Length: 124
Image (cartoon, rainbow, N blue to C red; front, side, top):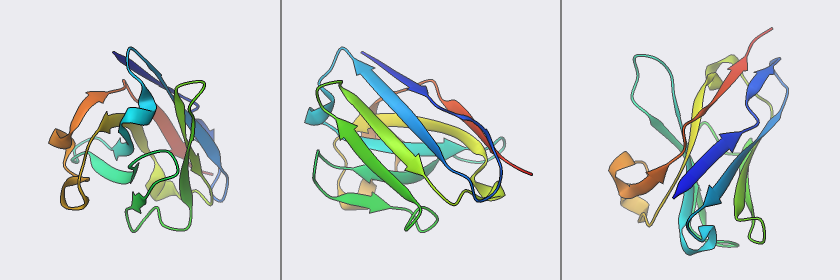
């Protein structure tokens, strides 16, 4: 099983990025897909999780109204669209798959597989 993130980079405040999580070795639409982020010295933070294609998505407060998730089932790929980016969004972003429930979606132990991360830097 492999999850590979891409699409990170540098963007100015107010800009946007779309991250990609490409899966192999598993069928992504059988799992919830989550995005986490981490900055040095801090715990990995849940950004959002999409339980299933077309299903419910739970967001962190910081992601609500700005970040959305989508999937391409044929490509076995998920995306994180990030709009109105702020400097506080600077972090390494990870995708993960698992089967969380509402009370556990932010718990990293809920997820079976992780990608290697992609750096997002928001600055002027």
